[in-house]
Length: 313
Ligand SMILES: Nc1ncnc2c1ncn2[C@@H]1O[C@H](COP(=O)(O)OP(=O)(O)OP(=O)(O)O)[C@@H](O)[C@H]1O
Image 1 (cartoon, rainbow, N blue to C red):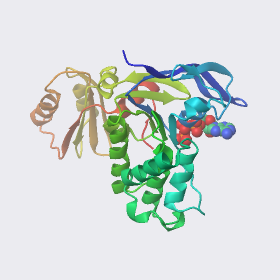
Image 2: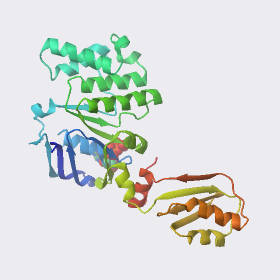
Image 3: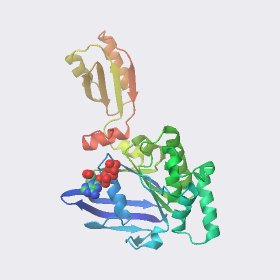
Image 4: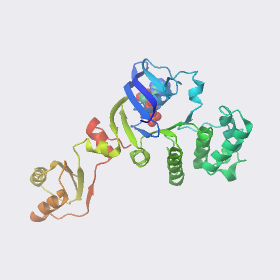
């Protein structure tokens, strides 16, 4: 049985009248890449800040590596690495000096620290920028420096809070590959994001958050199996009568058919040949159509079905 690295029980955090985290529960096992997925304002950062003991909270219990997490839990913090959304480095220190500073907070031995700093630089591929000051780095390189500062001391638990917001696609891919590599090397990862594609790409388990609550959790496949939607069909149609839309809605496995802006959207709850059935119907009625597209459910559909809102921005 793998060890429980993080245990959050019934966490409640309030900012005056606003309940930012509402009886939130979460357990993370060693070796997991746990994705915390939720729209802006759903409470991800607040949860992370409570986990790190940066914020006090009204109710609940938080344990890391089997011990109660407190502001002065330095032995626990030594094994944790944090990468925040906003880059937090010193402008007056070079790339090397910044990483050395953060690594030095945890690693006293000089030789060991030197080795770790070099390894972190190699890991984020900033070798040729060692002597650069942060102001001279592009946004993507700056993010990579931020990551190197958070992981140089080789933490067992790494927390990344929206590390790819406003990052170019190339740096984004490098960041995601880097996270997978850190996990392969043994680190447990918490990854918060409102980008469902990223979470689906790298996370072994996903917790969906809304209004401070854990509303669903599982692998991406498990989450998608929880909902009614099994397939969504989009068909471009110039004109179709309300009666025909209603008839399509009554086809087997169809539970919703909506026509708007010259596009028919048909949602199905199962079955293997839904697209053929809908197209046969249109052809039989002589209704001409253009582009046809069928999509399997996404995490957005999961979020939509549970909350009635879109996860997408
Ligand atoms: N210091 C604060 N004072 C008052 N309200 C706050 C504070 N920090 C966050 N909030 C509110 O708490 C709620 C949760 O915010 P939080 O930043 O944790 O969400 P999030 O899911 O991380 O969103 P984002 O991706 O935008 O950071 C939001 O309604 C936010 O406006």
